Length: 440
Image (cartoon, rainbow, N blue to C red):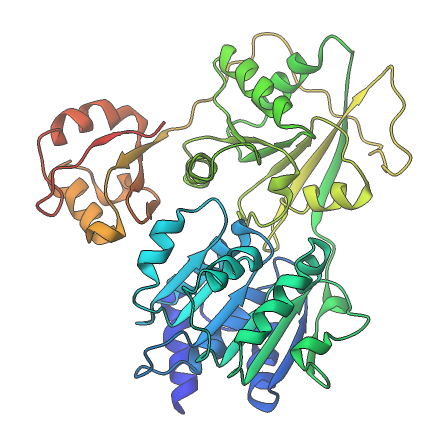
């Protein structure tokens, strides 16, 4: 067994995978034969792992500079790539930079160069212009969702970065659509191509229309959500104000939901996703910001509270469910007194949720907040040990753990949360006295 294969086997095992899929296998093989590589594949196909595994094989333990740069069009996708890389449990430092994140924290982290730098084009350019980034040792460049980088207007930033990337030997572009022409500023002339767009299988989604009258839309949504019995659901709106109004209404009905939109502070957005991912909330109310970059395979239902702006937006919203070969359902709320947009293919099957005395199902989990994280030398093992020994929780009672730079979040049983907080109130985590509370 060669060194690269051994590295891949260890990384796969660490990430919890038994084997590679066809896309990943072909990408790794093509990476050994081509310095320029184009991966064409739909979201949810395992493309992140496909480009990370060969990238990992080419990292050098004795290098002190940034060896690989990965660009992504959104902060959510950048964070997702970082999560996958960390799941491989390598010894290489990774840092993610994006707008809305603390610039000071990023600058401090850059004093010791990471082996892998992930970021949005705008934020990486900010660091370059401030003189905080040395990209001269970067040997590998990956641009994920390159088509979206162009769509979002990042071409000038990518051209600007290319001036700094003087040592790149391997370039990989990832796209969900065919590229009409290759970017000249990347010297991307005759790449190896791994094309799996033709292998795309339509997701197993069942579509429904949910009719309502003009004055009964919120009540119908409440009944609809109650009928899902706690299964993970995303409700899409067109405007930030609508998400907040819906959350307020549902809370008044004792139905717990969390909002997610571009008007929220980045920290609040991250906390909303943490509480949704770990099951503390069953329902996420969001704008189309949530139609891209959210890789949560367990989402069972998508609800269109407001009509999407176009057919493409409708497709991307629906794509949040039925992921990883699972099935799902999508519901289009239809006003009986209004015409639907021409670009929408209205589902023919009607769904009428039970009305009347619906009782919201509360999640059995809540999220604990700890006022320390990676920068304070706190890790997941520390929190598991603390909650098990000092908090007297069983292993199965400790849910998803997220450790950030200066804070951590852990899902724990709702019925034990109050007593748990009393038990650990005066206890220290790894010798540190921390603030521990239910996450807001």
